[in-house]
Image 1 (tube, rainbow, N blue to C red):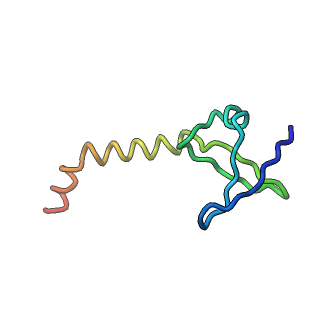
Image 2 (cartoon, helix red, strand yellow; image 1 turned 180 degrees about the horizontal axis):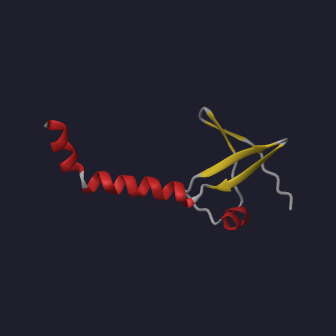
Image 3 (cartoon, rainbow, N blue to C red; image 1 turned 45 degrees about the vertical axis):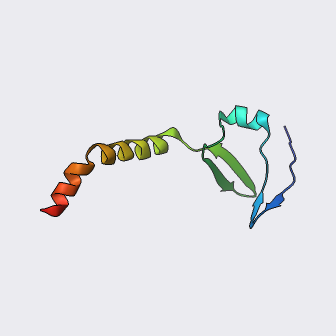
Length: 76
């Protein structure tokens, strides 16, 4: 399957829209992170692996849960 899109200027960035069919194939939606992997003379676009998001989510939850304890330890 070949799909063509035109690059467009938005502010100081150059952007390209991703067709709905491709987003569905990637199981991606607005707000998800995509990875651009350069392989030889091609670029592979893939959805960021959930494990990376899980680590960030878990660490954020830990910091929120133990914020007071960590602050108390710093003050000692």
